[in-house]
Length: 612
Image (cartoon, rainbow, N blue to C red; front, side, top):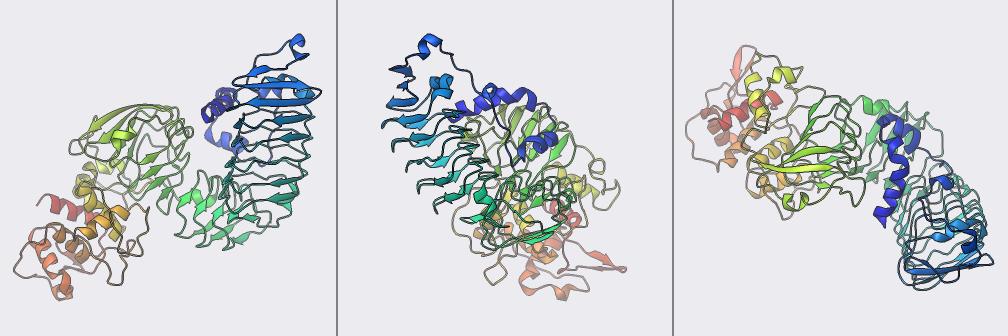
């Protein structure tokens, strides 16, 4: 039934919507808290009934159900799902509805615009009430939702302007977007603890919501901020910032999100046009699509705004894009309508790609996956990750999850081809890194090494057409590089480090590296993944990766005595093999073992190691 419902909506919108620019689409449609009232022209088409037929409908078929309408009372009986709704042709006659035991669902648009409907009896056998089922039934004053329904679907009771009370049964876990929107008499709502998801606008334009104060919070979900402060600290009782919770709050300039929050939903801070300061805790593991779109804070983050390993949305206009390898999740609609995009490379760090992430990228023809199959959204569960994309998708030989992944549809037309990561990618000639990155010059001391690691896919850019050669490498980054060199094998077992949470892009790499003796912690049950890595730590990781070969001799540097005892053999081995050499400091060549390794130095180290 989900597929039927989605296509009914699509057919009426697709021609107008698909050609709009993404910004116009979102601004005009996606963020509205008040819905546009639909009329009969918006309904799916059904066979019309003649006046002779209208006079008596006793025993008439409606799919596998029967129905009769007499004196304003509609009785629906039978067993199974409601798949047809022919009584809608007589919506103005319906005053009461009795659905008999055995009927298991109420169809999409089933009682749309039944203006005279005042009451309905729904049996316990009904477990599904589809979206817009009671849309604009403006005389319906009460309804009992059966205990067995798990989801109140999108706009199910929208514009039921006479509805005053609603009790959600314990069976319900999800209330979808705009479910009770514009129920302008709704003052009492009982929501049980079982409800864990309340989507954007579910209770917008209701007296009940307006009475909840500045921060209406239900089961940890902040529904919609109703104040006008400029600097906000989200209450620590909030676990989810709901969709559209702060959208178009023009006064908002700064917000602090506490450790209690794990989810920031779709469009949460959309077009907060003065929002420049956002503090987001590491506890946030999911950020919905366009959550910060149109904010100065997001725009200042460059082409690849990444928060807690989540790529929020691509803000560049390149045709060939390589996603940074500090990304583990690509948010909803992150590349939506990127008309310039022709080719994208998705690194092994990416574990999930949300719905519509590359929707309407009409010129995207090549997709390269570099690791295991990420979790993606099929067309059966949404629009699909690659909605309206026709492309060749390359996946690496030997990586896991692809046997199943390539059997699914993702909303577009993808031709799947396996490739060997050891070989150059098809039709991908080497391009000078000085032409790719604005901060790399042709003759710098590190350019050859950066070219080497870039061509082999070991290191990538940092966004905004930069490589950032002077930036430091973190311990997690180096662990990820070694993990990729080992072929990114599957991992299992417990993580020994308390500061490496499940789901981060580096989790598998650090677990593998620790289990294989390649990395060690900081001695207190932590790994410090985001700390800058020192040169001696880098040497120790490479040395352990080589199974700690025997070494002899000594270091000939004036600061050799500053090498930590635990790293001495590793540094000596790395120096003797030309992997780590000295650095010049005021005319003196020093080893600088405790200095941080920059990205440029890392490229040189890795080239020396791989070519030794």
